[in-house]
Amino acid sequence: MAGTDRRQKLIMDGPVIILVNPQLGENIGASARAMANFGLAELRLVDPRDGWPNEVARANAAKADHIIDGVQVFDTLEEALADLNFVYATTARQREMLKPVRDPATACATLRQRHGHGERVGILFGRERWGLESVEVALADEIVTFPVNPAFASLNISQAVLLMSYEWMRTGDAELPISEPPSLPARKEDLFGLFDHLEGVLDRENYFRPPHKRATMVENLRNIFQKAELSQQEIHALRGVVATLEGRKTRPRKDRQPPKNDPTPKAAKAAKAAKAPKS
Amino acid sequence: MAGTDRRQKLIMDGPVIILVNPQLGENIGASARAMANFGLAELRLVDPRDGWPNEVARANAAKADHIIDGVQVFDTLEEALADLNFVYATTARQREMLKPVRDPATACATLRQRHGHGERVGILFGRERWGLESVEVALADEIVTFPVNPAFASLNISQAVLLMSYEWMRTGDAELPISEPPSLPARKEDLFGLFDHLEGVLDRENYFRPPHKRATMVENLRNIFQKAELSQQEIHALRGVVATLEGRKTRPRKDRQPPKNDPTPKAAKAAKAAKAPKS
Image 1 (spheres, rainbow over the protein chains, first blue to last red):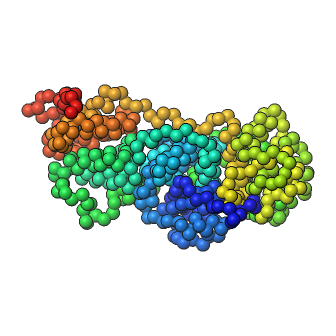
Image 2: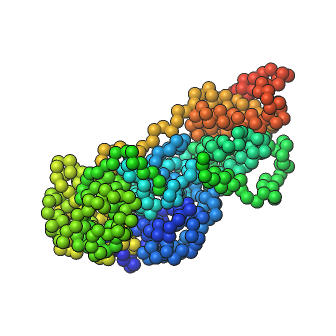
Image 3: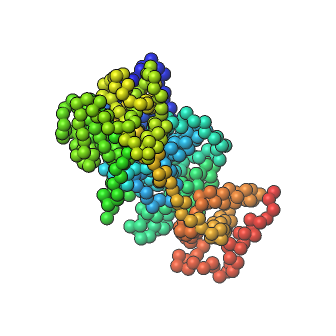
């Protein structure tokens, strides 16, 4: 549909869109275009199959070059979420997850409100063939599900991006009831730091038994702290708790860095481990 | 995004989608897929550039074969609209037209109402490069316009079809996937048991420093777990975490009873301590 007009002000605002392992440049490009249509600006890719830059993506972005040029690429989802305060994961199906499930309009109203309070917010989209892994959904705060035809629920990624972008734009029109923010949620990297710390101690203490249940147990623990919408101060307190308990045996109290012989963040390792095909 | 389930009932209902002079089979296919996602069924093409059938369209419909198989092709727009009672024309921009202009939600509410009264309704979409001609818009009853970014208003046809299909589904029975309460929160006594356990360990480990801040620190920690609305299972997992960490020094791993030289249950002691008046 025709109608682009470069003389008008280009809206660039709103939540960060994060695509996990996108396979097709066509979908990356169409997502960028959909974002531009509805005034979103920031696109992040986690481990895109065909690398980056991707000329197929640019060709399919229909001149949304400002978005393609600004794409950031990350090796892990944890890194892509690190500076965000509040994140939705999109899923096509209901899951057995201990997280609130919202429809797109409600989700975008929430995002709009938090964004208005100065939070950095994001929306997470899964890969083409099987969406998001549970361990990835576990890194988000809430879930958004589309009201699709139950017998034909397979929504293209760029279509999902479009719907969320559209709802974002729509929530800009309405005057939302503004409430005081409870407290600014911490940045995700602080939360992931807590995960790493706690899981590292529990690994050493052989908490995750039997080993094949480790992924599920990790996910459940993460959900607990995710649900609590921890502030930075609260994360600090909890790390103090873990440090108090572990510090007795495993490390000097003043060294808060991970051991030098293990540069990989444990959270990233756990995510990779969880990506292994399920039996 | 994964999620198609052929065992579920396939919704097939709603307005007829009419594409005028579509040029790309990709867009016809993606439109069919979007329709299927949101329960629409009937697709009509007016003079498609590459004729019909079109295998590119089928390949891009992601198995929405029931829609591709049912496509009707017309030489003129008048013929395509002949049996309909009420039609919207989609446009990207405001036009100088003597017709009401609606947003997608309002338009779909109108369509839903008329459809419910037995009217045959439809939505008209223009060609890729320049949308609908004025003479074509004139054949419709009302206009629907998308709330796009003014400087990047060029919406892909299949994306426009998706948005209208989505709004159609939304105006339906309001059976949106709204979440049940994620899980039953635990009884308070289980929660307090966790507090007692954790605070008892932290007391022994001298976590609460300086002592006059103990009450505030306890309160902050309790708030964290209160906010998380923990289920009984989650409390069980957290108690396992605390037990794992404390068990290393203060008691043998297989003996989960308190040491014999400390007959006072930790919970009771901690509860008493927490009751101390705040400074």
